[in-house]
Image 1: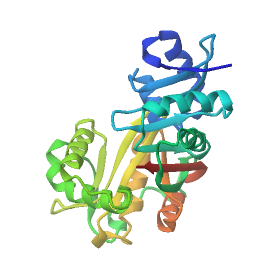
Image 2: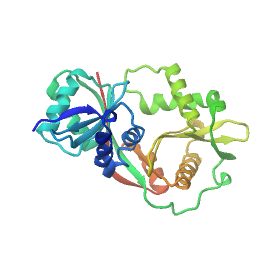
Image 3: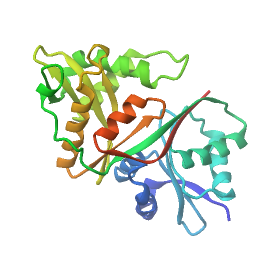
Image 4: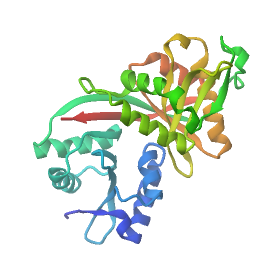
Length: 284
């Protein structure tokens, strides 16, 4: 049986069935699932001759591919291979088993070479932290938890640029400050940025909500200014962000680099538990 790849939002039945197909993976595929809920034109569905879904993914304007591909067989690989011949990727990001399927198809095209691969753990906040939310006095500095707005862009951009340099950019890729400023302003406009602030108005740590579905909120961009590290800021921030999401009836999820033992320990102390393996790959 051969599969076709169709734009999901063009067909009401396809969009509805794509959401049902991806629902068991709503947490791990939070960004993709939010795009399905929004009827985003980037969402593509692998369908059989009867129109039933056998895989869902998003292919964005920035050539980022976000897969939900629990079925790995020749029909899925062949359909992806045909798509990837004409749709090059810059990045693929998602649950490791889904990424492996995309990589198999990419290798068969012979059109792109893997530039960098990063392994992460995917975490979900399934239990409360043993301790109550820490008060500002329990950090080593007098800071408060704030929900940021557009007015905060200028003071937040140094933290954002440092985060991109340290945690995101592939090797040899240059930072684009203007693009990062636009990205930050977009998140601020959406009300998706939280931070810690001193009484003098200095931001010491930040986090943002990169996607939200009915049940989950994907936390990302977590970063503490170097001169405020190991002073309790990251834990205070993450506990407050997680509780804020719980107030909105959503469970916080995130992915963290396996090599960052400090971050892994921090998230575990805030009640996050490992759910699955996650991977991000960059291509030439």
